[in-house]
Image 1 (tube, rainbow, N blue to C red):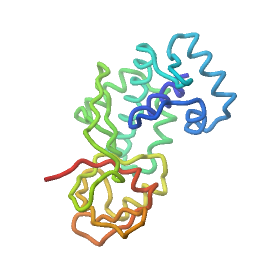
Image 2: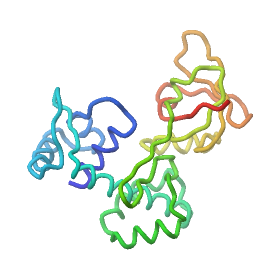
Image 3: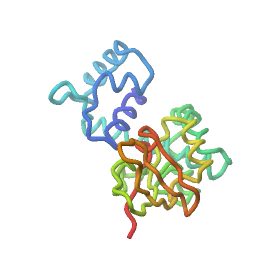
Image 4: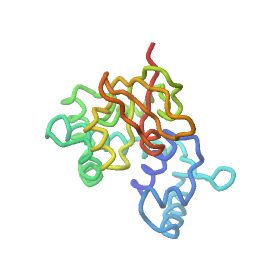
Length: 215
């Protein structure tokens, strides 16, 4: 149930698209019938509700549980990278396994040892101990109006191979990008990373990068 609450939170954190049963099934890697059974249990526990058109929403109590799991997951990811030397494309699955086993006391000590970080290695905000979440003011790279300069605020961790490619190009959190005019009628986004060679990103790659505009 913790996993489903975390998935529901993650699906609505960076998107305005209503959370559907099918979206949950795809994100969780399970069958739609499995999701339906799980959502019925979560509804009975009053952790979720259903809005118009069947979209899934978290109740206040459900949000509290989801944010707690998100905090655990992102603090563990940060610990694995900053303390144990993991690469940013290796930590998601490892944190998934650890987050259910560690105590609240250990999570608080990890938080303190890391200096109370506010975001994980991918730029996702780490909720505070009291459940506050501060999402950066950022938009997907696909919406940046060329020419302009932007800073990378967040990169989706849903595709490990994409993360490896981004790292090889220097396209990481806090990197400064120059968004260049693209080819007419092309769906690619062309950027120059920290003054380097131009990098052409397809729609999926550009949509995975969230940026804020620089002067």
